[in-house]
Image 1 (cartoon, one colour):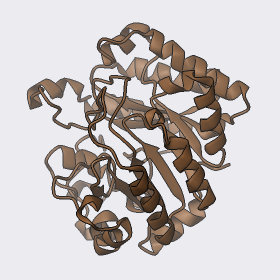
Image 2 (cartoon, helix red, strand yellow):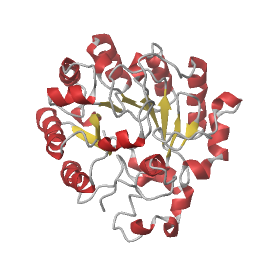
Image 3 (tube, rainbow, N blue to C red):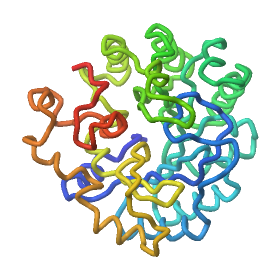
Image 4 (cartoon, rainbow, N blue to C red):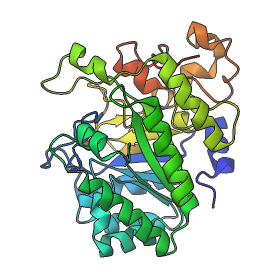
Length: 340
């Protein structure tokens, strides 16, 4: 099975529609990644009710979406997650889940995740397989957690879940060497037949940290370039967009965050975003704010950032809108991590 139904994706993009919904079901997570873009917490603060999730899925059906991207925090910590995933299947959606991986230690959770993602994908998160570096990237956590996730991946594969429907979703930061990131990509490809989905650090200001403190997370352009050479090889392409997906996917995606706000992407945290908590439905918000949610401005190449206009990748890439936003350049600024 292809990870993306490109016929439906391209149809959604060409018709200014939506292909995927990123749905955050809570902000609780126990993995403790030091670079987390959403400030995931050990205890729940923001979450959607079961009724709200049910209604969101119905609206997503009305909007003609294909896939639900189940996000957190850690979505598998929500007790009702499989009830919602089952309903999504009944509505005809693909289920894609983005888990840190730790809850998969529970065999029942692992089996249910594989069952309800049989027509989609399971993405886990292991940015390094170096035990010492793992503990650096997850302060206060033991590298035994890394081993736990690796064992769960093996159990998924032994249970028959296809490696082509598994992804290791990683974040490359300045705390990690190029060589280690490449070793991590190599490890999952050679040991498990699993490819890596990569993003480069988003400079969000987290509580208690200054901009200067956060600069240590930012890799250099030269480091990013070296990583993308290996990344391109993995995906069998000469050049890959500076996103974890292509611009068509970015443009045809919308997100409902765990605080109820609706944004173009789960990694874009807009303070003034419309919210389903204000008595409005996702269906109405998506239609009213469609131009904003699909980055309509970039449908015209003349509005691309100056350096992007001459790039050979403009058919599939407009840079990461989240990185531009997080760096204070607005949604339509130049991607600050683009080495090209």
